[in-house]
Length: 151
Image (cartoon, rainbow, N blue to C red; front, top):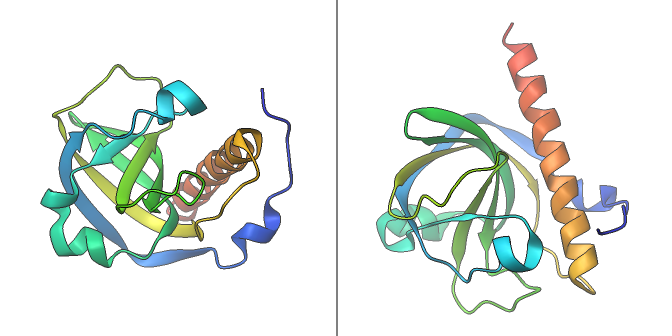
């Protein structure tokens, strides 16, 4: 288990969007690090299907909702090259904050409602996992706040 660290400094550019950015694509196989190495499974969206919209997205960490088979799930999304792993291609990876079986080949719709932070590099897996947990907690808080503001 990773130790808790303070990542507040990474969220200085956080903001919510006036209108959701909607992405729809098939879930494809990624690097298989999310589940195995990090314990945080992600759904990799087909960059081919996202096309120019996916390429135009600013890199960083976002929060929002994902719809899979008619059900909406809280979601934290990573867009970019994942500096810790030195990826050579840009990816859009959604972590649905709920335990699900694999859904490769399914088409999902991701609504990005806000931007949390820029991509960052880390000194080790413990730091990376700790920061992702911070992203998840902040995502939950932001989505609750958005729902409450609509009441």
